[in-house]
Length: 155
Ligand code: SME
Image 1: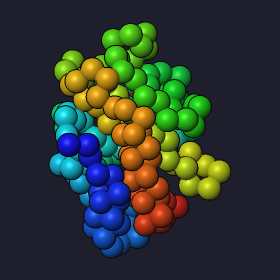
Image 2: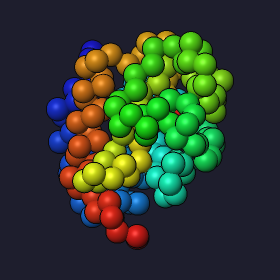
Image 3: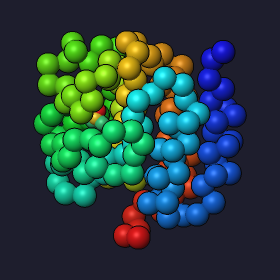
């Protein structure tokens, strides 16, 4: 059965009842990991220094940190500010392999106004796991996270 992203967006909105981005990003990564099938990693990388992504709240195995904007699928999402949907990570020359099990990947940039705040990264052990429908659905969940969170607070 296809994932019902409308239902997930409603559930996530009611789960995020605090403005704190740290609490909300932890909750969002756990919610996605447990609600979207066939993932082996779901989490946030944050831009806390220029041109570099720092590992944030996530679910899955310990992951790579830091990631420069110049490298990997996450770096490409940060540079371009466009969602990166990769059917076969082995075909990407500078893919950063945090977990050898990962085969496909979806990375959605997260903006706070004009500023790149970070990215949401999802990995799957299945090749071509993410369809355009999944991309639109996950982008919708990111929009819920952004609307519910105070991304500029230091808390
Ligand atoms: N594969 C990513 C790195 C992050 S891990 O998948 C959690 C990349 O190439 O940017």
